[in-house]
Amino acid sequence: MMMYSLWCGINHFSKFVLMMFFLIIFLLSCHHEASAALLHGRNVLLMIADDGGFEMGVYGNNRCRTPHLDALAAQSLVFSRARTSVSSCSPSRAALLSGLPSHENGLYGLHHDVHHFNSFETVRSLPMILRENGVRTGIIGKKHVGPGSVYSFDYEQTEENNSIMQVGRNITRIKLLVREFLATQNETQPFLLYVAFHDPHRCDHSNPSYGHFCDKFGNGEPGFGHIPDWKPIQYKPEDVLLPYFVPDTPAAREDVASQYTTISRLDQGTRQKNLGVGLVLDEIRRAGKTEDTLIIYSSDNGISFPNGRTNMYEPGLAVPLFIKSPYDLARRGELTDVQASLLDIVPTVLDWFDIDYPKYHILKPSQPTSLGGKSLLPFLRGDDHAESDAFFGSHAMHEVTMNYPMRSIILGERYKLIHNLNAPGTPFPIDQDFYLSPTFLDMLNRTLNGRPLHWIKELSDYYFREEWEMFDLKEDPKECVNLHRKKKYREIFIELKEKLFMWQKSTYDPWFCCVLHMEYYWRTLKDLFALRCITGNFEDSDNFVLRDWYYF
Image (cartoon, rainbow, N blue to C red; front, side, top):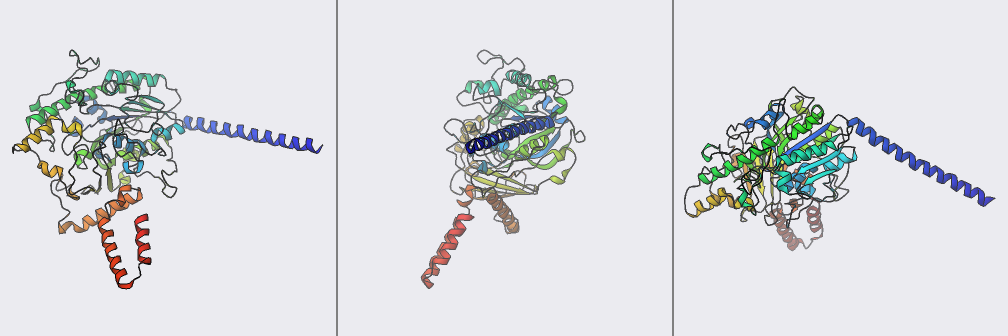
């Protein structure tokens, strides 16, 4: 009888546990459905150019024809002071999708092939967070980040399962993939669609026949294929508008003319019709999602020219950025000079979907992860009080052989400090794409033959830099005069350096302990050895130094 009673008790308890299990599953399901229902009516289209600059009318270039991007900008809030936190393809995209600088998310250099860099496996990326909250995610085009467990999308058509030329430059193929994504979309489920163009990136040096910027790909000529939705626009070298950081030479002008052609292809990929929707945007309209989709356009980094991509100078960091909201109409077509960063994309999208950033850590429980960016949505409503006063940049390398770590800070859009950790002595590395370009080869030949570069600096200054570079962006926007040794700016230099060190420490920068304080510690150790020789007591001082080294 006792055994029977015991069995009944266990049986009742098992039933209770089972009922509670199903109740929890039910509640979680309801919560997921409620979250999705709550988010219904809100979507995001994120379009990113590859090495895209300011070659468009909205930013003052009337030579490169971009009527469709200009039309989208006219319906958006346009940011004139947006930057990437790192000027390199994979690191920039990982920072954009994680909301964390490259030294914190762990993706230090290029992801593909022998470079093989990946973010830490514990990073919580934007697509991961959105999926957990009932938002469907898709990517079309250039992914260029890893590991797949961190940067996984529900729908993927990228270089990992396609030709990058087809999914990144063939605007007709991109259009059809957008249509496919939307056709398989649950009507009540919100989505984020990330369209990552491969234009106007320089052409792979293994495909030189397509032109310097793959500007001949799909142009209809024999051997180059045909993109039905593209009508190629050819530009004359003498007609291009050269940025101040590009040498005014025939070779550079020819290079820029090729770049313009691929920018026009990208522009037609966002072709506007009627009320400003077409190709990619027209597919959004066809699906009935225009009135509930936030549209963001930007680039991963600056253009591939001297002072541009892979640099911490403004041409490498500055990127176009405009955002169109279907709800906030007051500032459409307006240009704002508030400071913005690609690290702001994650908090902006999470804010749009009303999703909180999760609490977690990447490496140690004592190092909680937090977003350093801000939501840009308040600016669309006219609230400029949310502006931050400092921008931070972090670069480790581009290709695996290009180890040249740099950190930077811009305070109040006035003073800028760059820390070149490997300088002086180590030459600045040049990436393969740019090294083989007409512009750079011409610069090399001119330097070797003693001919003028028609540039803002000499090539030797470009290669060999000082450890600290400080600029007054108001008085010296071209960053030609290094101020860090001038007594007049000593206090500002110290302030910038201290704020930069504090940011590195707060974001767990592994480079923070490598070079920054070596001189300080050598001085400290020398003093300690001198102290030991005098007193014979080294124990307390020794422990102090080891603790300081370990925790700073």
